[in-house]
Image 1 (cartoon, helix red, strand yellow):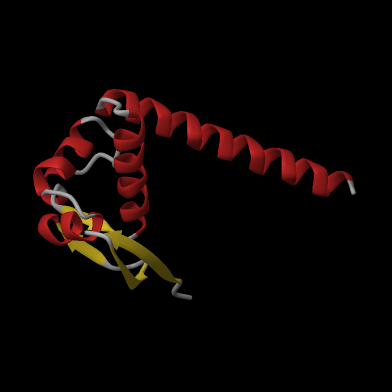
Image 2: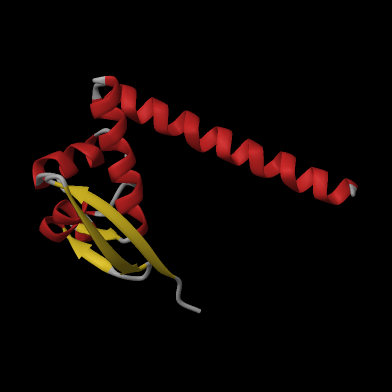
Length: 112
């Protein structure tokens, strides 16, 4: 089963909507465009391990679900004027909190 994601993006003050197939693969330039950033910025996300590590043959391939993580990284960087190393740590903490919340919900459902 394929999941389709709908996303609204505000770019240059205009609202843009896009539908992205989660199985879609982007090259570096298209991924950067989908994130509203430069390819150099995207490569920095790889360097700081904000995006998953790639093998040499796939270094410039990105998946649609990674657009959300990259855009979140940009918002954290912008809103908190944070370095990319700080953004990487914030994202790790956010991921851990989400994981713990799922565990708590799961244990509460089993108890019911």
